[in-house]
Length: 257
Image (cartoon, rainbow, N blue to C red; front, side):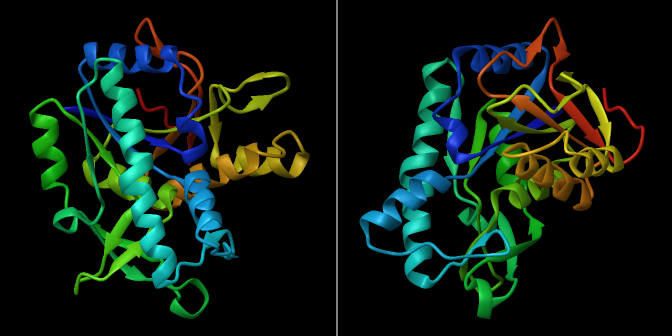
């Protein structure tokens, strides 16, 4: 079974185009199974503001108190996940939303309780539930939440959760859906970049602004053990004529076909 994992940031979900979903259907026709892991930053920040809770970040990760975690879970599970599942269903794709805490799907340990609170580092992904849904031709849509061995719920960075799920499923591709077509180098989308090339282009100033956190997330996914990640557009078609469009990032010159 060929599987592709697609990570959607919370801000990208509202920008997903009809062409994006057409590409998903083309992938299905080509024999790929799809799995989504999503974030929910904007929706979470909006609800924290409504609830009068000030967001706190430490080294780019959201500090998660027990109060914050309740809001994070409510938003991810009750709003953002529902939104993405509904979009997939609207475009004729059967999807099922699940939490990373369901059946201890994502097992995690606390990273740094003093500075980050209830934020977890993924230790293991129990992928039986995912495989069960894929066998029935459903698209699992997973929230980046995890739980400890004693069932304490934890907030997981969506990029790290996506990489862990991708690795556990041994996917063909791990894709980061963004608001751009890929990494622009010398005025055009680079189809393939090695990890050290990405670092070089950041230092050189060709990769700037909002692209930096996107590629940093991709590099973090590589560091977790994946051989390849891709940055693709959520606003345009990224798969046509059995060809993927975007930027593939690899540790070494190792093109994953």
